Image (cartoon, rainbow, N blue to C red; front, side, top):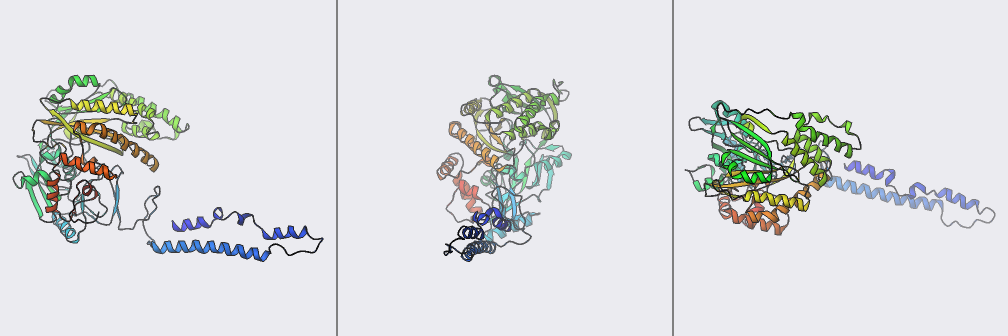
Length: 596
């Protein structure tokens, strides 16, 4: 890159205009011919003096540029075979071979590190933790990298258990399974099939590592079902000071309930024993309702349905209701869909075709055959054309409402297949959790929250795409869970707002990012304190502003046992080798730690 820049600097466009127009000899010829009849006085300047001056000037330029180039080259030496990343705006630095690039799934957070460990055995993991503690090297635990805020990233070092992904033991009678923490949910579910078991509940996607999904307080939906960390019966933690320890309700219950949703800061989760349930089929019923009907039926639906969620579509009155319940023998619903797949996609395909004509100067023929695109792919491509144009976003949302109306119906499948959800492409997400009363007596604040949120979106003309996803869980006894509560009957609502990143253009992604954080700030200022709402750990974005950071720290202290958590960190990881900038900023400590 440096050599290319030097060539460009010495090419004609970079030379002074005088070098292209000045000709001393022709000037002298004109002067002489006009004065031939009289004695020639001494010319005001001679050919030799001009040539010497020009030569000295441009020779000086050349030496100056050459010197700068040499100084830069030897100040930043790079091997001839240095690897280069794909060019991005303002990012042209070559990457050495030993530098790992690690980013989260949405591409919103990325670090480069030379210290990336992937042990294959418990003994190897213990060695990594012990050596890192002795040398004060950071090894932040990271799972599948699905967290929107990159909670597991640390440029000074990471440890990943993807190679520790075995099922160690299945107790079919007790319906329990012991696994290495690096196993993915999808792998575990497939392994449990032959034993007639499955997990009690699932998040939207199944690619998380078990260690990661429990440490951040992930959840599914169902007012009787707690977050996923409640399925943990016991854990093995590899800690810097105490080595490998096992915690459970019987063995060190205080640490167990603190570490079950421990954000990776109390030890590397190496093994987990989970309580399972019998493998079962579910009937999923999807239909479109509206806010008025939701209010009439909400209490009944929460109580009657094992799993339920609402997908609210901004700038419309449409609410997609998804109810899932166990399949009873002989009770397979008889339902013939009114519309086929092509008819359900007709409006959004038409909108995409029209939008291509509008935004692509009639070059729609060059676009991929839209008949091959799924609904979420069409939505991503539509939003990519003009993601922050409120008029365009409203049309996309209306097309989405039409799609769901024509997709109403039932489907039957195994619980792990039914409970998954196509979240779409890369995105920014903010999800909050807040109390919603009890199962017997819902407070209805969950619907009030949504009503105010939709009103805020419309008043501020936020280009908010669909959906606003709303789910529910029972409480968790894990002290750091956003749904933590001592009340067994308490229920919590989880609401997620979103903006997609359907483009690779850096400027466009930045504009979307800025708009999303403005959207998030509106909800924070208007709703969070009023409804005692706290963000999902994997979706908290640490403020850059010191005052905002101090407010976040104080707010977290009101909800969570921060002093207790920091005390446990000090006992188990006094050098903070399992920490990163995220933990260090939201849970500040004056104790000695390694560098970020």
